[in-house]
Amino acid sequence: MLKITNLNFKYNKNPVLKGVSFGLEKGIKALVAPNGAGKTTLLNCISQQLKADGSIIIDDKEINNRKILENLTFLGDSSILDPEIAAIDYMKYVAKTYNINYEKIDKVANLTEISHFYKNKIGTYSLGMKNRTMIALSILPDTEYILLDEPLSGLDPSSVKKMKELLLNLSKTKGILLSSHILDDINDLTDDILFLKDGKIIEFKSYSSQLLKIESSDDSKSFDILNKNHFLHSKDKLIIDQKDLNGVLKILFVNDIEIINIQNLKDSLKEIYFEIFT
Image 1 (spheres, rainbow, N blue to C red):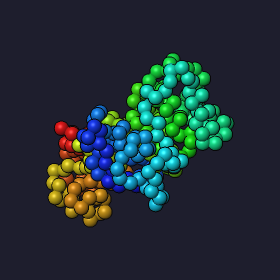
Image 2: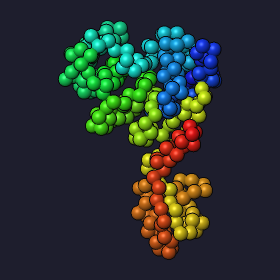
Image 3: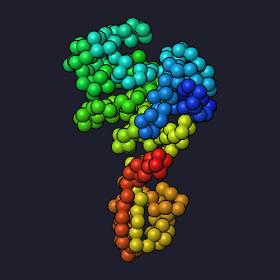
Image 4: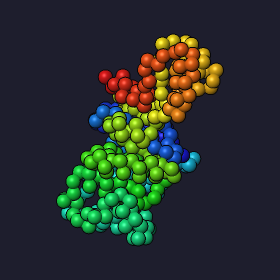
């Protein structure tokens, strides 16, 4: 487990991060905030590119130096890429640094769909191509944890879909912390959210995309019936699993209860975001 405890960072004596604490295990955790709120700063502090006060613990061992890169990968955004260098040259450098067989370079290039351009100079790449290159470089070392800064920005819809599939597959064996302000992308990737506001973390566990909230003509009666039949996923709200919808509709119909509205609770993430940041 990657555990961040009481992380503090100041820039020109101005606090940017204030007592940030959270944990990361296998799966995807999203770091959400408007641009300029400190998302990239936090990722830089975790990866030791910026020195912060606090502790960073991996598997019960505190690491406050560059050795953390043996367990964690973070390369920042694509602005670090030299336009005169090809992606394959960066990949060879990473492979050599981590003692990785060069054969893996082609496998990762194919996986991230950069193989048709990775021998060209980066100056010829679109933003989406650069972002795919950054993802390729991030997963090549095969570290236990991966930090990603706005990894899906600049990608076309088809590439976004494929990258999401790749990240979800990686998250089965790795812990991934990705920053983003694009809520629709987050909805597809994780229910585990870290909002960063005023330098502090607000943890939020959103509802699964499979959960629905029902509004009926008699909510009190509906609650009693659905609770008795073990359909509910809440102690005080009409929240059901999507797979049970047909059964719920039938039992309410039999009891002369009309369905007025059905809401996918995943959509509530936008409401939470605006409540926090406006």
